[in-house]
Length: 154
Image (tube, rainbow, N blue to C red; front, top):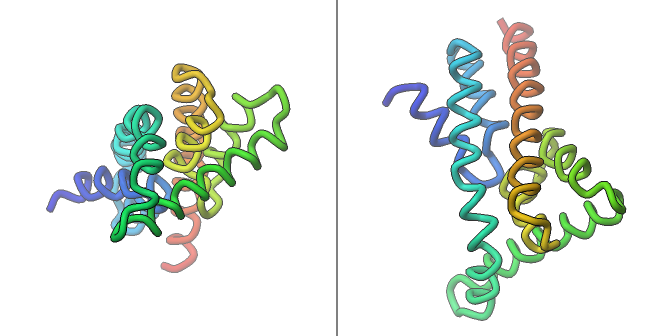
């Protein structure tokens, strides 16, 4: 499989997202700029769908027998992220969402940030823009971190 296609697909996976795809890209010695662009595109494709449909699907499925526990987990994770964002942001919710997505910590990527924005009823345009800016920042941080990590290993 083409390594750039792998970067694209990895960046779409919840919890791994762009952070993991950039580490993969630097680990297999891909050119950083094309990998960065591919990872951003892959990470951003699910964002509108998450914003528009995730809450509805999670609420619908939270009491279903097989999927209920996982859906409840996702809903609680998004609500927790939303509460954390709102508590730290006050009126600066856009900036808080940008930082939440942009600082590559576990559980703070585009998926969680978009779900939190949806649960907080942020408007679509602001949510997507803040998440996009956060993804750009996270990509830069992970590209630099990955390059540094793999330079030390060699």
